[in-house]
Amino acid sequence: MSISTSKGVLWRHAGFMRLWAAQSISTFGARIARTGIPLAAVLTINADPIVLGFLAALSTTPGLLASLFSGGIIDRSRRRPIMIYADLVRAVVLLLVPISAALHALSTTELFVAAACVGGASAIFDIADHAFLPSLIAKPDLVEGNAKLALTESVAEIGGPALAGWLVQILTAPIAIGFNALTYFGSALLLASISAPEKPAELKRRAWHRDLGSALHLVTANAYVRPLFLMAILSGFFGAFFSALYTIFAVRVLGLSAGLLGAIIGMGGIGALLGAGLSRRMCRLMGIGPTIVFGNLISALSAFFVPFASGPMQTKVAMMVAAQLLGDALAVAAIIPASSLRQTVLPGDMLGRTAALFQTGAGAAAVTGALFGGLLGQTVGVRAALFVSASGILLATLIGLFSPLISLREMPPRPG
Image 1: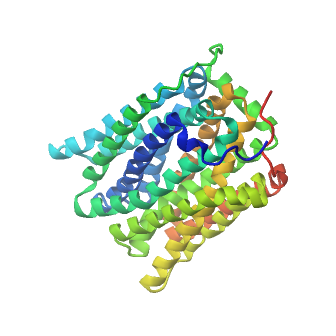
Image 2: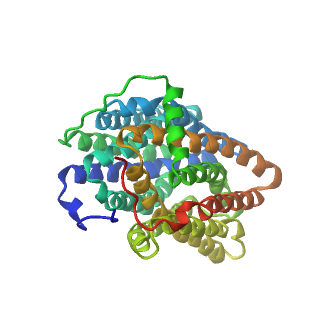
């Protein structure tokens, strides 16, 4: 199977363009909330590493629980309405934050609850979205479709965190979070306007653990998807406590302001934007599998720029920017073919359950990693803990290096 059919065909696909527009505005707002909530915790409640570890775990745990139960339901249902309901839940929950602030009733507990609810709804949305895309566009166009969606993520990564940093610094966190609520309402309206018919698969209802069991059997039996799953678990563990400690390291150890930190994180979006355009070229030159493996490998190596950052402010900022640019560029270049590979080689009526399995495995690893990272940062120091995390992320890439992925050049035929 070739990497794509007619290049640019999706520009004329009305349903995909509406899906793309919906994700564009929702992912932009999500970046604001992702950056704004940890900044609010550090700057308003003087959170220490353990508290940030619990906050990261609290944001991830509901997604883990949702993944356990939602895969089979999504495979037996129409995916688009599920995505709409997930958007509306996120919008309503986040809209309560600025309302509470206006009434002088906002508490840190409410921020934690909001993060937990958004985490659960986001997990369900992502699983449904992964399963919905192959029913909306042709399988040979999946790489192009995923590249365009990754382009959206990149643009949001550029503007969202930078705007979040300035909103938190100038106007307070509730306004930043309230803006995110409006983006989810807009996303729901756009998804509702998609007219493409969607017929749910006729599958028998089974217990959630049987759904995950069947997905696990399918994933581990596939020589190409199995290493992706193992890499997702290991990188999820070490990546979670890297993320949990990143903000406190930047603010307290390096002395960066909230606005400067937001701008640095936004540079990762520029890297991701480059990676979205680079991915197709890498796939053509190197092949599908090597792009996944070496993209993840170079991205993992770039993580070491963060704990190595020291010296004058210009040097520290340059190293943090290098980590964002290089790391995000190669990570996105690898994610696009990895998602397309899963959507191609796995049966369409199993995409919800297999996506739920990936979410569950990576989510469980992330919860554990966030808690472990907070404790480790408190014990040995934030910089040393980040070195441990970066080493673990690098270790995860070796799974792909010694797997059949390294020799996969073309997309395998789809099942059946």
